[in-house]
Image (tube, rainbow, N blue to C red; front, top):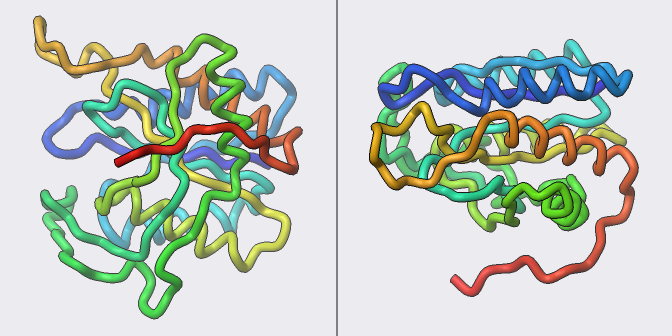
Amino acid sequence: MILLTGFEPFGGGTTNPSWTAVTQARTLLESDGLAVAAVELPCVFGESASVLRGALDEFRPELAICVGQAGGRERISLERVAINCDDARIPDNAGKQPVDAEVVAGGPAAYFSSLPIKAALHAINVAGIPAEVSQTAGTYVCNHIFYTLMHQLHSRPGARGGFIHVPFEPSQLPQGRSTPAMRVELMAQALAVVVRTALVTTVDIRMAAGATH
């Protein structure tokens, strides 16, 4: 079983391409004969983690990938590391705005993704979709969920997972605005590529995809 999650709209938006891309990716993967569950998470600290934990208990996936929006980025971002820190620049959808709080009290400082992110990056690029390895998932609800996911998977032997950020999609931008955007169809294709790659890759490849700052 594969679990994919996306987020509801936040910050005054009316749509969130992470959820739309997840639902389209589920269709693509189901056409491969794979069993896929898709769950929409609330953009709320704490509540989103509870919903994710419930989904992990219900579906017991071998692979879980959470997806969120990183408006302003140009590429599909394969996140490398989740940190044990909530530090919200803006309130979440319930008005919560934690500052310098731990995601999990007493938890490790960070967890690395257990996805083969370099192999996935190569496969996405071969498919002609812009992608990158990202060294930060931020400190908002996306990182909150990424850390929660990896903390949960740490006690579930054999299960792997990680987090992916997607850009804005064109309909979210006012006409004439030059902010980077990507069609949801491409996002969905990239998510499907990551899943397919993860299912057949047990040892990640070595390739340069780091950052200088």
